[in-house]
View 1 (cartoon, rainbow, N blue to C red):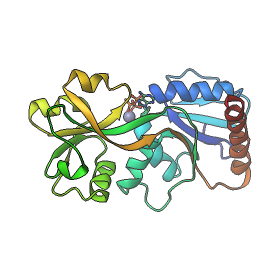
View 2: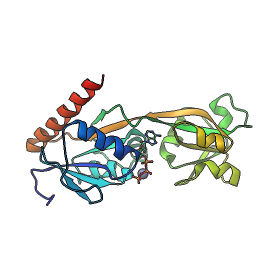
View 3: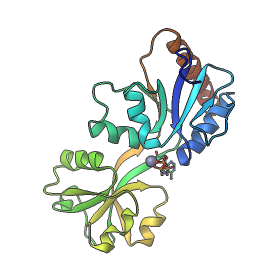
Length: 222
Ligand code: ATP
Ligand code: ZN
């Protein structure tokens, strides 16, 4: 089982964009797993590591809470959890991985006149990143703006009249364009992060072995 204290736990996204890149990295690290991806755990064959297969949103709290020793998660998700104060005092260490890059952007209806953050004063912004959005609004002195939390289909919120703007992950901008929206501001540039620790004893050794393999893959990619 996975309760053996000498096995390190690494939480990764079970299925999705980050999962694809994560499993690709683990493969390049020369690691293979003994179970199928649709189980809760997968056992790494070359190192004493159990891979915890979860929703990406759960990874920061699993690591901060100690249920998992390490995790691989998007900076967007990690920083949102941190900004929302959900990681408590146990904020893990972070190593940027250089993949799964994306941007968190505020977009406005194309006809909205926009030249500076103050033009967003009083707007309702539909997002699933309320903490990062509110932090940006505060840092930029945007007055009276507020977030409306939505967990999907943000881009239709302005047409529905429930928001004046959206703040969401943008890759090509095609979805925004199709909904009559255009990027006004990029508020966060994200990439996958290797999070966790500091660890001690046997777990620190295993984590170091994994980190060295990742470093090797990164070096050969440069
Ligand atoms: P889950 O079911 O685990 O909650 P999800 O639907 O929240 O999955 P995905 O769409 O699979 O998430 O995206 C996971 C992460 O991948 C995002 O949080 C972000 O860090 C990264 N990501 C999102 N979009 C892109 C993109 N277009 N290109 C690269 N990376 C992306
Ligand atoms: Zn998610």
